[in-house]
Figure 1: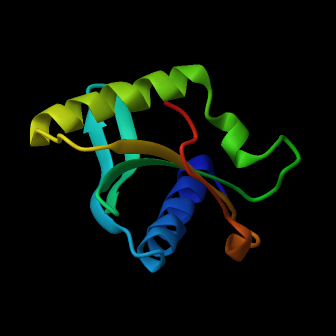
Figure 2: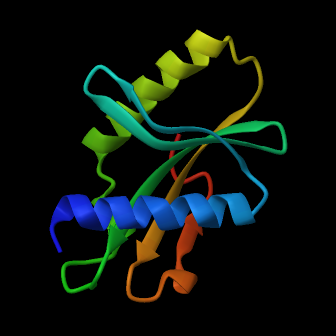
Length: 115
């Protein structure tokens, strides 16, 4: 399975996981310039920016380990634009949702993954 198909499958599962936790999904694949945020959601008066990482195997590490400083900087740049565009005045949070596509029920939702 190619990288695009893995990502699409992971994001589809992520949407289901996030909605099952009672989050309201506001945006999917939000883009600003060359930056993208996989999911933007609202939960308990928090605006949450979620990066989804999924893999079929962990032979090259865990999915969440692929969120490096460059990726974080891009997510934060896009988040800043989104916050400004909707004039958000409350708290925000950045999460990572790590999914093993072979066992999606064993996903890892890391809240406050970075600032």
